[in-house]
Length: 241
Image 1: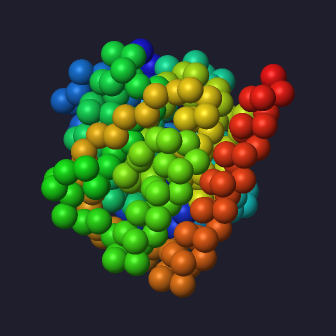
Image 2 (image 1 turned 30 degrees about the vertical axis):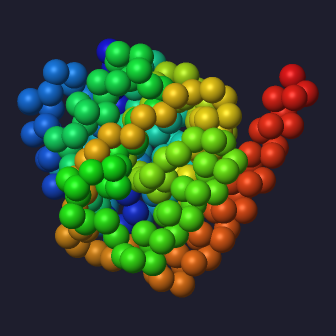
């Protein structure tokens, strides 16, 4: 079982080494061992240098592609190198590597094609982001359910694992801007099973999130429309097959 952890990183010079150290620590305790790969998304700080100095496996993108482009680079790498499972794992330290096994197990047991680390299906995670972002997540969750009949509570979680079939799907077609909720439509409409796993998430230790309150409102509106449009397009494509 080959498993790759994909770590998108943009200006994470203060976080990326500790993130990789946490993965190394978790690897010693897990039943399934994982490889990891940093996707340096055209960072303007010393992210590239930190990876090189500490011999962290890294792909340096020549320009910033955004989270979707960075993660899809990882999925393409996973597919071309015959990985069975790929896991998205943020480079800012918010995700807890001790939950990797919880995301992997349902996929290994063929209980799910995708697992999502969720802040909202238990009380494990005290950190749940700002109130306005929580409201936006609830609205996106509602829109997704209307379009797909599938309830996902933490639609924006970037802590996700997928099997080989979904890796192939994502390496060919993956949203660019805010891919987590948009890509769920594609997964559900293609008949793949999603399972949410309760996890604890942490606040970012260094640096600031690029998503401001104003951007959160824009994000909610844009992604809601994208979910609706993508749902209609995929439905039409299915009818024409």
